[in-house]
Length: 177
Image (spheres, rainbow, N blue to C red):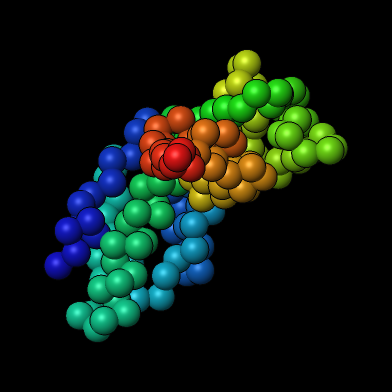
């Protein structure tokens, strides 16, 4: 039995889950998300709990059991609390400006780097910290990864864009004579 899949999902007040044959829609105070309904599992909503059960013990059903529960739980958390990731920009002369849907960054290149976020994701800038927030966990993580990939942190001085909780392993420079 899947350790994740067998856990029930608590549905807070104000959240409605609608189960169709091909998609599951979750509506809450922050918005609406749709999750694909996987073929080898069933989702049942009773009162304030949603449970995911698999149809048989085939390998694909076992894999989809935990996946369906995790996707549904992330959707419920997203429409109630939302998700956010924080990025830090480190480097002499590096600057970040903008907010909302777009950023303009000076990252040591000969030109300013512009980034446009997709709909549903909000960017906020506080000095040298970028906060990516939204209701879709996958989309928030993807946008944060795309911003980080513009100037990855380098191991010698630690310059670049890194996650706030990321630890950069530093290397020693050239050994002097």
